[in-house]
Image (spheres, rainbow, N blue to C red):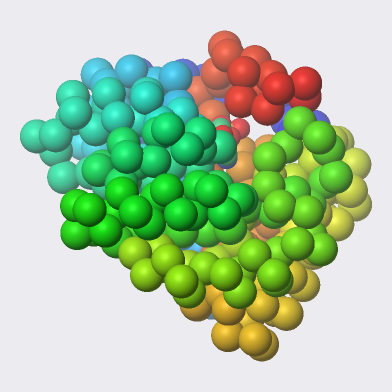
Length: 252
Ligand SMILES: *Cc1c(COP(=O)(O)O)cnc(C)c1O
C-alpha cells in the first residue's frame, strides 16, 4: 500500500477520534484535488467499515458518516440489520457470489464489484422481484494480479454493452484496486488504465456519469491526481485492520 505502515493508523474509539480522522482525510482529499487543478467536492469519500463492529460504527455515524462500504455480503447484511435504526446506506465493494445476490438486492444501495454476467443477471432478477434498483460499478483488474477480482481491461467494453438489458442496474462507473506496491509509478499505471477505459466507455455512452472508484488508505491522493471521483478508505478512518489482505484477495 504505497509505503504506508499500518501503524500509521491508530484505532478510532470515540466520536472525537472519528471526527478527527474524517477531517484529516477530507483535508487531504481537498488538497489533492487542488494540486490536480480539480474543483472542491469532486471526490466522494466512502468509509470502508469491514471488520469494524457495530458499536464503533455508531460512533462513526455520530461523527457524520452516512454510508459504509463492506467487502463481504454477510457482514454487511448483519450490520445493516443491527443498525437499521440509523439512517445509513450500504455499498458492497467485494466479490459477489451469485447465491448472495438476493441479499444484496435487499439491503444495498450500491455494488462496486460487478465483474461477470451471472452476477448481473442474478442481481437484476432479485432487484426486479423486490422493485428496487442498484447503483453499480464495473470492477476492472488493472494490475494483472490473479489475486484481484475484476474484468480484464480488454473485456470491459463488451461487458458494458450487455448491461442495458438489466434495467434494475444503474451503471455509474468503473472501480479498481491498484497493485499494492511502494512504487508509485506502478500504482499510477493502474489508475491511468481505469481512466482510459472510462473515457473510451463514456464516448460510447456505456458508463452513465463515468465515475471512477479508485484509491484506498495508502493511495487515495495518487488516485485523485489521476481522476478518481470516489475513494474507498478504511484504515485511515477506523484504524489499522488486524485481518490480513489475503482474507479479501486470496493469494495477495
Ligand atoms: C478494504 C477495502 C478498501 C479499503 O482499504 P483500506 O486499506 O482500509 O483503506 C477499499 N476497497 C476495497 C474493495 C476493500 O475491500
